[in-house]
Length: 330
Length: 169
Image: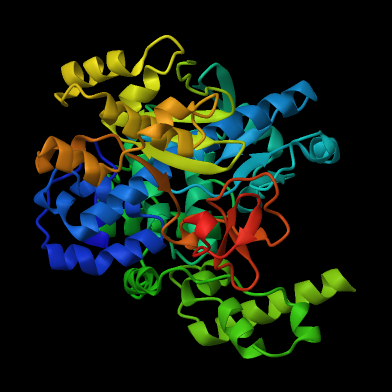
């Protein structure tokens, strides 16, 4: 997977040798984790393009391409509706990173993640036709809780989507959010690391490394780890100037855990906690699906250099999450 | 006889290389038109008849100048609801299958060039990044996985259905 996706986002992607059998082996995983379109981009001009796996990747590319077009349509529509209600939304992920790929359909789309100022959140949600499925409004981005909202807006940028200007996070905030988001989800989707690779390739001149690494030091250390993993596994260009250097030791288990997470594919969606109270069957499976990985627990509760054993941390992370859920119900 | 006109409302259209990808925002369906079908569709302006379209296919793609090739494409577009009005009986009367045409033309190598309109569906629901509640599919596209249980279904035609249901394939 890592070999197939290394630099796959580039125009043109780097050449690579892979047999039809090898491609056939990784294709189901590429498809399952949303990397099918990137896979096609990588192999479209190779003899493998006409193999069975190549045809499956091409179908995935078509799907992602039209999905991207629909996503753009929805984004322009939603931003227009919010603006007409006097609200300026701030986009993260989705099109904000997809537009940096050679084609926006090379990455999968999920929700439309839009930040709106907390004081306008209720109005935004009540704006007719805004809260359709797939639109996710946030009064804050939890990954960027250590940054003032005013600063996020001040550093934000506008980019044209057709005749609509879309406001999105500035490059420093966005790259930080991308890194922390994939840590929170345990790295399971390889295309998230490709997003980081794309962002690193397309860093604007004057990227403010100092600001990028400001905020919670614990988070900054892990963010640097993500950049290092992107460099090591996917050949991302990590060219950090002196002022942006942060001495971080990559945990020796991290790269292998990332590869394991990729190999495991989609983690699935667990039932709501509350449903087990009424229907206890499957509770063990539910716990298993919510049990945080070593990456998730460590990124949340300890510095990369810490030697705290992982299992107690994972148990602690699970307990805290359960306690928060109970507190929310009380 | 009314000549075919392409629908252009409530559609998202994306042209990629020689293919045209279309998403129908009303029916929540996505289609891929190959070069010939895309060319036919782009000439469905209510003024171009089948013979004129056949001439375009011949000059642009090297297909034999045959109205039946155009009819084959129009039938696919009609089935996908990509025309403003359903086709008039004379155009549908000769609804040729690809095989019949190839037998008639005697050129099997033409198969990949014949107009094709195929439906695009998500190979696996997990390709998207979110899971819609089972009752949350109204009015949204068929790409998003939904559930319960375990988010293994997809939003299809406004409902959360099994990916194997005939209407979703």
